Image (cartoon, rainbow, N blue to C red; front, side, top):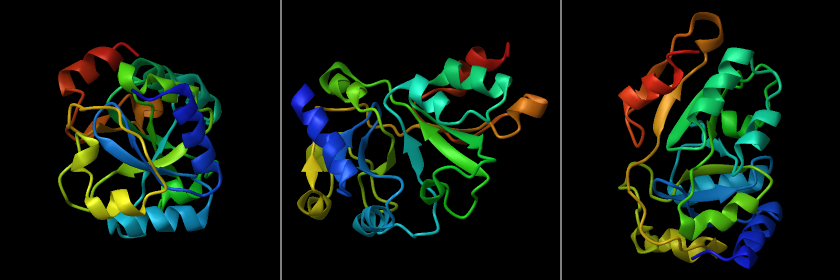
Length: 206
């Protein structure tokens, strides 16, 4: 069980440029401050991830996530509200080029996550600032459903480890909503925790 004190320490760790291992609602992740080049470079080095690959921006409160992107259109905002929090990563338009380190080589797009945290990790909802997030594994390696499944070298080099118990182990579904505002078109980029039929049910009426 993650305590309120541990959640506060997690926020401070991120703020000073640290890299933390933490539980989401799907698999264990790595987190760092999304606007610090050195922190992002270190997270990518721990994973062995190519620097040109984008990562998701994760908020722990859906309303804070929406407030961070005031440019989103009404229909897209409704879709975000229908799908988050939950086991999805939403690819959204990013015309203001916010959080460029998370956006990577395509600044016009951003990946957004808001986890539906299990009770063991619910204290993280108090974290008010977003993190740049990627799964806590080596690039291309298996996802970690327990803290012990995170590769030993990543656990050794990370600045903080948070144990939220055993997670489902299926990564988030990646959904492209970049054309949703204009055409209501969406498609699944990666199958994952949220089923396609459930996605359709939540946003087909928008």
